[in-house]
Length: 347
Image (cartoon, rainbow, N blue to C red; front, side):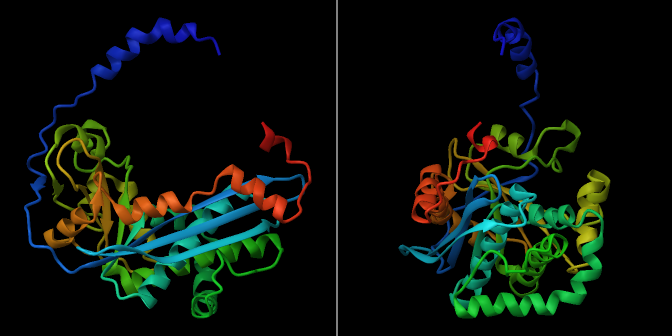
């Protein structure tokens, strides 16, 4: 790269950054989080990860999901740790499928916690809206809708059988036929998500450190998260917006349509979108999505189990679930795999 272009455009780019409107009135949306008595709410939460090594004819992968449990005022404890190693076949659409495997394993971890642990809420590392969007990504041509009703019960039986036996893998083995393999991997994801929404939706909370949506301040074309982050310093939360409300259609039709299309699988009544700062000062503003409106007791309880403005069970899960390249190298050696790594992997 010719770095001289950076020097030439430095002043121009700095001026462009400084011209961004930052001083925006957020007071009509922001509520200060008041101090309250400690509750006895029990949270669980987790995160997932994957890594891979590409070989000429196959891909070796490891995928994991780790969750912890924390009662407000109590100590944190491990809830469930799931890991799987395999080669991916057919050798096609590897990155997309591994992200799906990771999400499926995270959702199975979520479901296991709801079934086996006496918890009030499960914190999912990510946005519930993003989970819904993925159902459209996988169903780009609409072919899954007809298959969903046909195979839903069969897939649910296999999922619950896994959870009951403790032999939980990212996806059930659907064979190597390309078309059917992709179909059932994607259907398994949709079935998992809708089952959790149906049975445990009121206890399922998505917490995300990033968000590019602009619904509160759509006239500025700047992400809501950035505006709240720059203009709010006190601990608190924004008044939630219901993404299922028809008024959202006038702000962002794509968001409303995505929710509406998902109703083929599950008749979603409410999906609340809001922001929270769990500690005073320059701590991160987080995006929260939930199927029920969260009251101040829940948000105060979240604050009490947070470190550095982030729920500690999610931070610990993230740290413990990382799969490093060195882990993949060791995995290959244990398996006796000494094939040459694919050239794309080396580069």
